[in-house]
Amino acid sequence: MKIASRILFLVACLIAASSVLLAAYVAHMGEGLSPSALKSVQSALQMLHIHVLAMLGVCAVAMLHQASKVLLLSAALFLLGLLMFSLNIFLIHLADITLFRAFTPYGGMAFMAAWLSLAVWALREPLPQ
Image (spheres, rainbow, N blue to C red):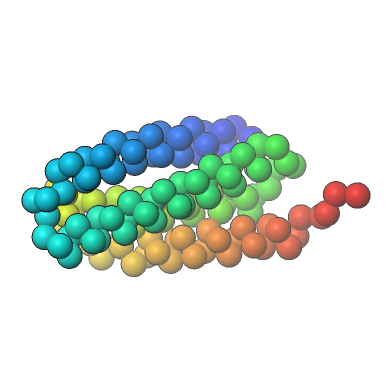
């Protein structure tokens, strides 16, 4: 489990770094987008930044604590949400790829499931004595 947490942590670091690049691109090149497309992309960037930080936190806790399938599930669900929600919105508005458009709402559901599984872990994790 620790190796999976480390791999997910590294993936989250790469996503976070690329999100800075993407935010800069949108800030400088976003004037070509319609106002609604720009709003969608900015919303996707915001969700990306929030949830990649959550994923990093979950992975860090998983590496420091006893192995937990629930923490690993939470991190994987955050990753799934990032791919299905944020990445999909970027593909739609920045690359005009609409093939995966139907998956976007499921990305939001993956984010919610990730937060809820994190809450389950917190409830089940024994408090330090």
